[in-house]
Image (cartoon, rainbow, N blue to C red; front, side):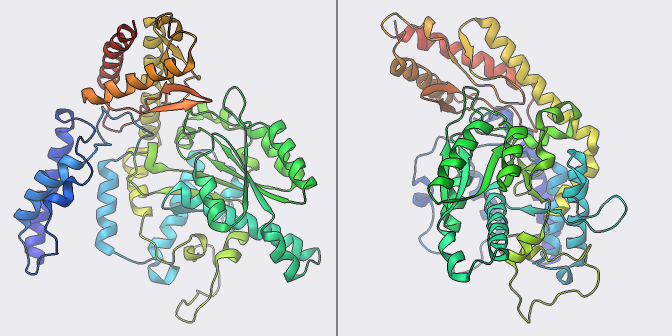
Length: 497
């Protein structure tokens, strides 16, 4: 493909993408294919000779499209959103044009410096404390800074590595020998609640430390008291606590942990505090949500995903650290073929030392496009619109009378179940039967194909958890969700009679 054909085919693909978004309401949001469907349709080997663009395009429509779940559909309410936007797509196109491997400043100065700038922009937009900024208000270099990771899971691992580096540095400063420190590594303990994302457990598996899961309270939050009890128990057992994850908007319920209390505990116990705000962190662009995040200014690291609820195509996970020295020391490996810039490092950061891989894409471009083409006001309107829809859905479910709201609706997540009292006498009072009824409701809704959502379990209780947040959704889609839920709730209740 030469430049002339690329120009022609590129315009065709833009039309194809635009047509796809305009027609999303005409297709079921979830794929109905069976495992192995694509293998049966594909050749057993790659083609020996070139194939035409027309043939590839046809295969996208006839083979790939049937196996796609349409996350961008306004009728997709599963998990948490994975926002896309046309400005972000344009930014990704420019990134693909340059196709750099931006592991340090010399690779492409603009890539490094734009990331430093937009991460400070974004940090200020969500109200982060100045200690997380790469450049302070007076123009001097700060100790902290932000970096774009691929996912919150990567951010979790990177933050935990930095935390481990800090605690081992401090033990070394106390005169511990290398042998002592090696022995201590296996005694390090990280703390999570039973509502923390699975990324926490995965991070401990990767770095080789222990994980302590703490039971959340009745509001599904990690509390200071429960954390302190666990830390004290582990210290008495000869273990070395070093890391705590508090969540701002858990996956199951969008619950907010007791961040001020936990921050007090981590300060008194000298533990690294990481805030996982992967989903709900985007809401902090709206000042009215910031009181809910009181205490994050005391954290050591903070992470949220613009690719979830802030209009930026996957992958774009924003991680800030208050002191980057531990992270850089832990992940720095010098080689002759990786030259460093001499002099001021304010804008010449080696971001390869802030992440797990060496190479990295120019992801800052799409975030830059989004922040400029929407502006802060447009991003706030996007978030507030979804919160209004979630509140509306909550009101309709309550007014209907057949549903129990399981957790407060704060952001775009609504967690509910059929009231057990409405199930027949032989079911009412039996938790398994009530759970089966709500699981059946999820199955019927998704089998219908008009909308898609997922269920969850809250301390043994089955519930539905539609997440409102599609950048291509509207109040009409939320109204359709309520209509479908109502129809199949009647079927479930009558089916248990």
